[in-house]
Structure formats: structure tokens, C-alpha cells
Length: 252
Ligand SMILES: NC(=O)C1=CN([C@@H]2O[C@H](COP(=O)(O)OP(=O)(O)OC[C@H]3O[C@@H](n4cnc5c(N)ncnc54)[C@H](OP(=O)(O)O)[C@@H]3O)[C@@H](O)[C@H]2O)C=CC1
Ligand SMILES: O=C(O)C1=N[C@H](C(=O)O)C[C@H](O)C1
Figure (cartoon, rainbow, N blue to C red):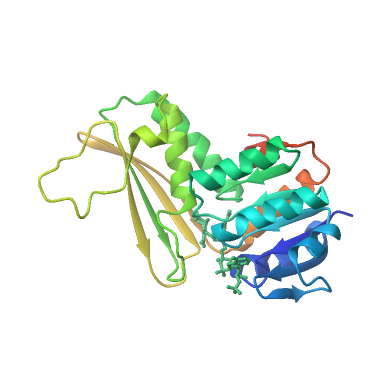
């Protein structure tokens, strides 16, 4: 049986993962957060890593470097679901993969969003730059990062469809830069709403003169992310070193 250690175990996602792991046939070594053990006998990340086949991290970007080091030292795979990652965090992940870690990073572990990402890439590839792309997301009032990691993931797939990088196309600054700027052709815009208990809604709008295509996904609860994360853990345990994505697990 694959045994999982949960990082960020006291959080909404950490608790959701602990709840679904048994029904998917995974064992639990325990869970820690920044204050130590949340459940199980292991009081820090190093001890938990040593007792696990794979670690799963849904915590905070500031914790990532320590979690990568602990996984490398214990020679166990790591699944990273934390969002709000900046380019320096992605470099740390690439570096750890180069130093022998099997690491999967995904801003959204649900099947539905990963299917949606492929539909977005395909749609963007078939439409010219006279089709404006806007990504709208809504999440619960406790979420700290914006735009969501999923919105950025969907924007990356849209940019790929246009043979471009998200860095070249993304625009985050429509508000606060004066009132004299029409939309720049070919760019990808983002809007973030926060309120209530929304688990995660995403909509990608392709708009041109007189018509629109809207491709979207609504998460009704966190169990969809938690099940995807546990499936990713089961798939990652014992994998060779390298950086993986949810599409590898799902065969997309
Ligand atoms: N990939 C995906 O499919 C999904 C990703 N997410 C992402 O997962 C992350 C967690 O979300 P959620 O569970 O809602 O957040 P919560 O705030 O509920 O939980 C975060 C957990 O991480 C712990 N934590 C915070 N900072 C640190 C640190 N520096 N070191 C160790 N542990 C730390 C917290 O401990 P404490 O309580 O002591 O502060 C808490 O246990 C977010 O980035 C979110 O966007 C969420 C859903 C799905
Ligand atoms: O914080 C959340 O809750 C979620 N975060 C992820 C994101 O930033 O995209 C995934 C999901 O939408 C829920």
C-alpha cells in the first residue's frame, strides 16, 4: 500500500485529502503543518518524509523550498498543489527534479479542469487574435492568491494554442492604470472574484464581434481536488526523477 504524508494537513485541502485517501486505497503516514504534527506520530517534515512513500503539499509558497529539500533527503516523491507560486518557485521545482526528485506540480488536480485546459488550447489554436481571451474566476473569501493558479494554468494553455508564452500575452493591470486604454489585441485578461464559500469557478471567454464562446468549470466541493491529488500520489510513488504534471497522471 502506498503511504502518503500530508504537508499543510490542518488546512481545508489537507483535511479533504486525509478524508478521501482511505477510499482510494492509500495509507496515511501522518500530517504536519507549520506548528508540527496535525495527526500521526511525526512532528516535522523530515520525520514525516522518512515514514512516507510520497508527500503531498497543499500549504503556502513560502514552505516549498523546505518541502523540496525534505523530499530529496528522504528520496520520496512530492506532489505540489500549492498555488501562488512565482517563477522562483518553479525554478526551485525544476532544480529539485534535476537533482533527483520525482515531483508533480499542478494548480488544479481535478479531472474536469485538466480536460478544460486541453479544450482551451484547442480552441485558442483554431481562432485568430481577433478573438479576445478573458479568464474569470471566483473563489471563497479565504483565498489569499489572485489570480488563481488554475486561471494562470488555463491562460498558459491558451497561450500555447497561440504559439506564444503567457509572459508575452498575460495582462493583469486593467484596473488602476487610467481610463484611456482600450484592449490590446491578442492579449489574455484576468478577473478575480472572492466571496462566500465558492470552491472554485473558472470561465474562459473567447469574444469577437457579434459572438462569444465560453468554456468553464465549476467545482462543487474540494473532494474533486483531493481525489485527484491522491490519484497523483498513487501514480507518483516510485517514479523516476523528473517534473510531472496532472496530464501525465490522467493520460491527457
Ligand atoms: N491544486 C489544486 O487542485 C488546489 C490547490 N489549492 C491550493 O492549496 C493551498 C492550500 O489551500 P487551502 O487548504 O484552502 O488553505 P488553508 O489556508 O486552509 O491551509 C493551508 C495549510 O498550510 C499550512 N501552512 C501555511 N503556511 C505554512 C508554512 N509556511 N509551512 C507549513 N505549513 C504551512 C497551514 O497551517 P496553519 O493553519 O498553521 O497556518 C494550513 O495547514 C492554496 O495554495 C490553494 O490555492 C487549493 C485547492 C485545490
Ligand atoms: O484556493 C483554492 O480554494 C483553490 N485553489 C486553486 C487555484 O488557485 O486555482 C484550485 C482551486 O480552484 C481551488
